[in-house]
Length: 198
Image (tube, rainbow, N blue to C red; front, side):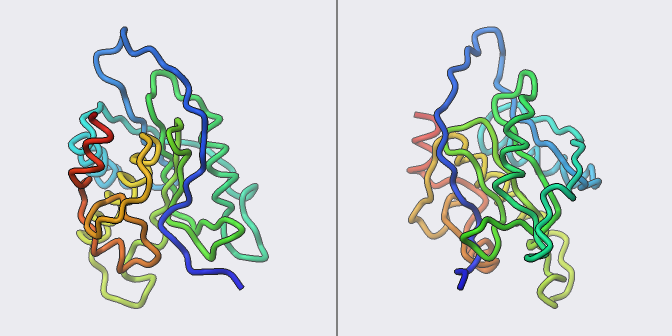
């Protein structure tokens, strides 16, 4: 029997050394796969920039999702999608996060909201399970946007070396259910911020 889904799965990675001496500010790239709402993505990019202080851009990605689909589970393999995003090597990108709108899983969990290589170059997040309608509740676009921002910031936090945080309101807190996502704030706690900045 599989356990409950969790917000993310951390995948350990050996960080690559990068020289930023020729860059004015490292850039995070948000790579959208099939999520066409540009204004929505722009708001997420602004939230990421405010939280981490890095330059953020977003691009549209191309992928044949059929290669990652598991018909037995009616879901998409998060491990393989993460490897795909990691293989892209976006030029001049400090960190890359792939954004999807499909139901993700890894073999040991019912579902995931996203995952990332710890201290690595990339991560993924899916907005599929973040909207109210999926749970029979009234549509709430502002809440959906807030959840999406939290998940993107959370996964990028892992790429910056942050583990799950025990602080119940820190954006790096692990979330087993959507209610957990709603309970945490959009920002890093003082401890986590010190690890990223320090």
